[in-house]
Every structure is written in structure tokens, then in C-alpha cells.
Length: 353
Ligand code: KG4
Ligand code: ZN
Image 1 (cartoon, rainbow, N blue to C red):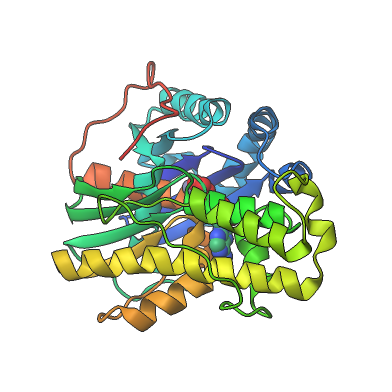
Image 2: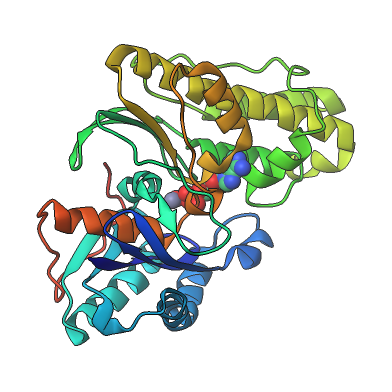
């Protein structure tokens, strides 16, 4: 069974095609990231406009990559939340229209749940992907770390999961993006912090870890403020100094040390909690999902501390993509989940797990 997945929740227009929930047949992504980088973050109106322009060519390119026609596609899956309203609307309206015209069943996908399913892809004939050799097993502990979410979720089975904890304020990816802005690194902050952190000393600043009432909950706004204060102190100004002018007073080695210290503590925080949940619930598998799951520091710390072996998926499948949406779509069919109504499926920008 072959599912085509459409993802437009933020700034990536992506179409993936997946067979039986494990074989990647195509994944084509057009990103408007470069335009947003100029503004230091995603501008929703621009993202929506770019989706309109990219949607049709991305769909055509994905079918071409999979060497398939519409008649080979068994169903369409689409992200209907969470995300930016204008962006979600383009994907959902496209999917609804295609479902009606091509007469395919339609499945609405929760974007965050979709991220987890990137880990179920284990084979492909496409070049440039390094996939795990086997699928994760249940019970499955998932650490979801993206620009919009930071959650620990325990899956007993497909579509049977419990949210153990989540962030009370910023998502970890958002913290990477904000810290990058403070020290003058380009958006998105995750990759640019990782790059300069490699030459910095991760122990040069003493940054705090938040303590939460629910031990699986997260908070990153205090850490971000601590980085701001440490930077102000380093360059000898107080909190009244405009923060957008701090970066010009930092030299490359100071930026590297701040980046490395922040990255180390932010990643250690999520690894601490993942390990804690692992020890409490004893899952058979652990997966990481979302944009921050492409962090090599996260992979390094987690592999070092987890007592079980963990296979990571290709970083290209960690950031937003249509393949993860198509994969979850396959399981919706295989596990007899309800179809979405093609004439009325609505977006849900605030959808949670
Ligand atoms: O999942 P995603 O593509 O979009 C959302 O659903 O939010 O995640 C994007 C986030 C951004 O905040 C970006 O800074 C972060 O993922 N990110 C990283 C890395 N690559 C992307 N964070 C840390 N290290 C990375 N290597
Ligand atoms: Zn995402």
C-alpha cells in the first residue's frame, strides 16, 4: 500500500511517498528558509505564499522521484495541525482537492505524531539516506524536540500513547533559534550553533538547568535569559543595553564558547529526562524526533548514556518532511483508523498530542 504525504505546517513544502509504512519511495522538499533567514525567523504570510508556489512542482517531482503515477497512490495523508494557520491551509486544501479529484481516501495527520514516524522508515532505493536497520518496538519512548515542541511521549502501541511531559514555555529548537540571535548567528539557530560550538568550550559558562514540578516537563526560557545575562556580563554592559547590538561586541571565540555551553546544557537537560523516563518505564525502544533530533550532540550524549543501543534516522527525515506524514498515513490505514472527510477537513493550528 502506497501513501502520499503532504506537509506544509511551517516553512517547508514537502511531499513524501511511502510504501507499507517502512519503505521510502520519495521525499521532495522546497524550503522558504532562506527568505525567512533574512528576517531572523519565519514570517507566516511569506511562508503561506511560498507554499502556494511550491506545492504543484513539489507534488510532481515526488511522483517522478518515486517513478509512480496517481493511479499507484492508495491514499493521501496531510498535516492538519499543529502549525501556522496560513501554511496548514495550503497543504490541507491541496490534499482535500486531490482526494476528491483523484478519488483517494484522505487521512489527517498530527504533525508532532508524524515526526515520531520518521523512525519507522527502514528501507529505500533513494541515494543519500542512511536509515535504521530495524523498526522501533513498543513500548516506545519518544523524545520530540523541534522548533515548536519539546515532549516526552510513551507509546504502548500505534495510536495508544501517553504524554509524559512537555515544555512550559519555549521549545528547545526555539531556544536554539533565540540564543543564535543573541550571539549573531543565522537562522535556523540549531545548525548554526552546532557549527560554531564545535570549536568552543562547553564548560566555559555555568548555565542553569530548570527544575520542574513534573519531572518530565521542560522549561527553556530561563536558560535563554541566562545566556543573555552571561553575554551582557561578558561584554561589560547591563540589561538596558539593546540586545540586538550585543553580537557585534563578541569575538569568534567568545561566540563559540557561549554556543558550546548553551548547546551542552540544553541537550543534557533533554537527555537527563529521557534517561529518567527510560529507567522508570523500561521501554523496548527509544526514538528521537523533530528538527533538533538531527543534532549530533544530542545523538552523542544519548548514545553515551542510554543502556540500550539506539539507531538514529537520517537528519533529512528529522526536520519537517512529507515522508513522515506518509508513513503515519500508512499506519492509519493498516490499523483501521478513521478517514478524514475530504469536503470538510479543517486545519487545527493549536493541535496537541
Ligand atoms: O521539526 P522542525 O523542522 O520544525 C518544527 O516543527 O518546529 O524543527 C526546526 C527546529 C529549529 O528550531 C532548528 O533550530 C532546530 O530544529 N534544529 C536543530 C538542529 N537542526 C535543526 N537544533 C539543534 N541542532 C541541530 N543540528
Ligand atoms: Zn516539525
